[in-house]
Image 1 (spheres, rainbow, N blue to C red):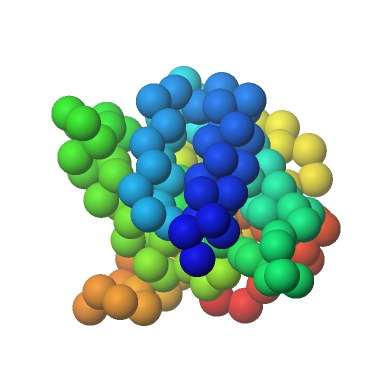
Image 2 (cartoon, rainbow, N blue to C red):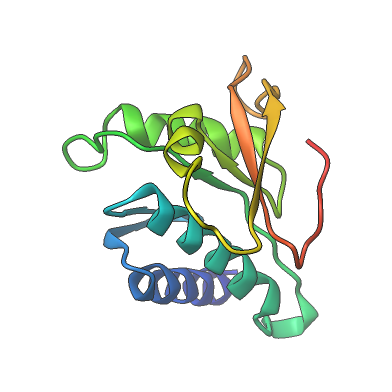
Length: 148
């Protein structure tokens, strides 16, 4: 288990760093990074999804991640409203999904994201925390549409 976790952390740290991520933080299976723009963050989220899906994991294991992207102030030491919103979005997303906050989706409205598409998924329930969160899904063409 620990070897798999270490490999996962290394992979995501490398991908997010290469995509412009700053101050990449690792804690168990959670990874956080700051980006200068919403577009950088969205493209990094897509790259992370693709990297995890394409990686040859040991023992024939397959892996998929849920990603939450929010635009706002990170706070001190990553403890702040932005990281909390990312956590809520991750909790609502299923494996293989990238959920964006309304703030991030608005910032991406006029951006060219290539083949990536943003779709409104409403207010899906979170899996581990009581409540729902307003979310938009960043749909990757290689994975097709997923259900929320």
